[in-house]
Image (cartoon, rainbow, N blue to C red; front, side, top):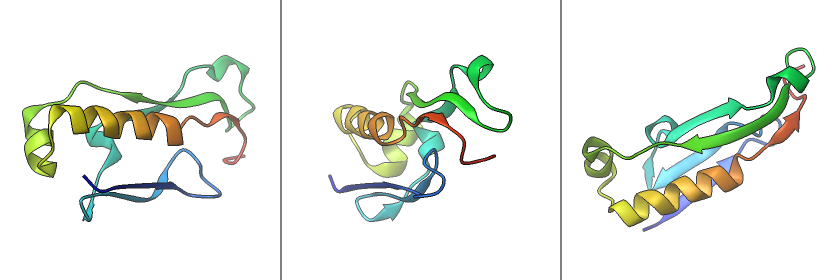
Length: 91
């Protein structure tokens, strides 16, 4: 499997490039970015922004022609690359 995950420099919680086997992909198929500490965030910022993977569906596996193991690898990479922490870029 060929996987490319590149966050934006100035918006680290979103992706400039996300492809699976050369196909443009949607991170929302694999989970979502969430601020899990918004009580400690600046106004319009994030206290601790992380990507949280979700359980796969057969539709997503079929859409990208990937296995369950590959799905897990993709989620791990998204969680790693989109673990922003405290951020004020949106301020």
